[in-house]
Image (cartoon, rainbow, N blue to C red):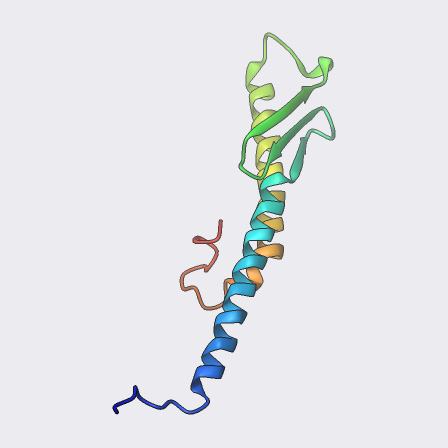
Length: 116
């Protein structure tokens, strides 16, 4: 009776590879969830403007010191808000690189696009 090809011990190696891939996928998913649920705080002008955002890049809080609010100079306030947002965004990006960079090695390009 004909049997399928005999790959020797390859079946065991393939099973090990599949287990490793499943373990890595679980770790990636856990890291993505950790980032998604984290809170990142950005600051500008010392602490005159503070902004908090979550791992989905949604702003959750914004505080502006009263002395920074000048109705005759809205441009400065706008610039400080942008700086605080960019600071928080940079912190989140760095956290993503720390937590997901190890999985991006062979993914082409910068590797992290598919993970974030």
